Length: 202
Image 1 (tube, rainbow, N blue to C red):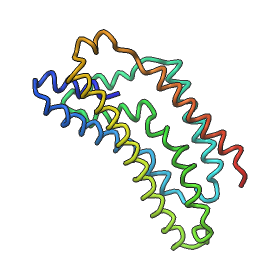
Image 2: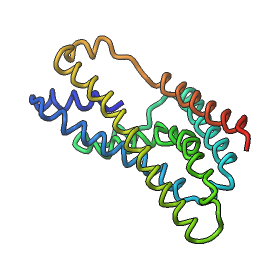
Image 3: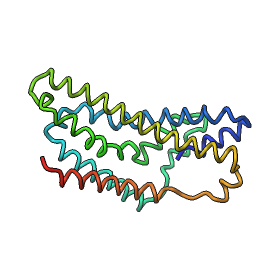
Image 4: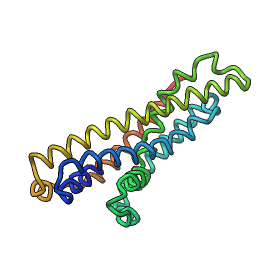
C-alpha cells in the first residue's frame, strides 16, 4: 500500500532516484513490523505442545481482524500524522494497523510444524529448548525476509510503471481502494489457517 508514496516522493523531488530511496525505507519499516509480530512466536517453546491450538487461535484472530477492517473502513488517523519524510515509520505503523504481520502468523505456525515435529526437538531439557528457539528465530527471519521481498518487488513494479509510463494523471483517474480486498484476504488466510489446523491429525 505504500508504493504511491514512493511515486509521490519521486514526483515531488523531481528526480527518479528518490523512488528507490523511498522504496527501501518502506521495505525496512514493513520488515520490522513483520519481525515485531513473528519473533514473539518464535521464542515460544510452547509451540511444540500447543501448536495446533495456537494455529487455530491465530487463524481466528486474523479472521477477526479482516472482519473488523471490512466493517470499520476508516483508515487509522495517526497514519496521516506521520510526516512524509518518515516513510519507514509510516510503513511500520501501516503494516501493524492493517494486520500484515498478523496475517503471517498462521502461515508461519503451519510451515514451522515440520521443523517442530522432529523427535529430537521434542526432548525435554534446556538444550532442546534452546535449539528449538534458535531454529524458530531463523525461520521467523526467513519468513519476514521472503514476505518483505515479495511485497517490495510488487510495490516497486507498480511504482516504476506508474512513474515511468502511466503518470500521475492515470493514477488519479484510476485509483481504487484496496481496503476491501485486503480485509477479504485476511479473512481468507484466517479461515485457511484455522481450518487446516482443525482438520490436521496430530
